[in-house]
Amino acid sequence: MADVEGEVIEEEATDPEREARRRLALSQIRQYPDAALRLHAKPVETFDEPLQQLVSRMKVLMHDASGVGLAATQVGVVKRLFVFQLEDGDDRALVNPEIVERSDETETSDEGCLSLQGVLVPVERPVSVVITGQDESGAEVRLELEGQPARIVQHELDHLDGVLIVDRTTPEARREAMSILRPRIVLR
Ligand code: CO
Image 1 (tube, helix red, strand yellow):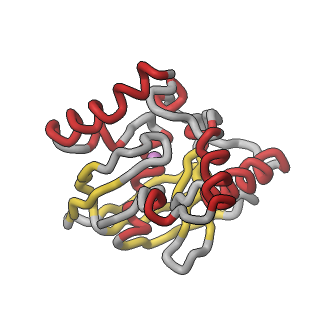
Image 2: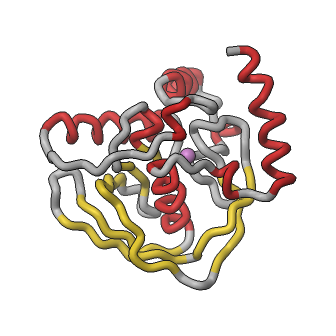
């Protein structure tokens, strides 16, 4: 089972200090149905210090929230960038990302999202992708990814176009996800 943006956390969070950090991080991440999650993010044109600070802050949030990816729209910043974790645990930032190649072969696997807590739905995606973009300093990046990292970057790129996992899953799973999310809407 793929664990996009970390949904195993519930079982893992035994350390109270770690759990407090996770809750604090989640409180800074926009939660469904926040309107920012539906916005189409704009290209980044300036690679300045504020951008680098944003990337650093997003990496800390991703880590504290026990996630493996976080898009700028999830922190209310309507810019085309996300951070994610490679399989070796290395945190990377991708600015103005674009998928230039997708495998014909697809795989369906469960995905979670830091903005849709408690939801885990099956999503079909290409198994491998080639993604291009820039790093936080503006240097060109081209990554050939397969498996989990390929799934993560597709999930994060979706965020930049206002697309969520509930839009990509089966009608049944979507219905179930909505029943989990709906009570939370009432309580807000
Ligand atoms: Co997400």
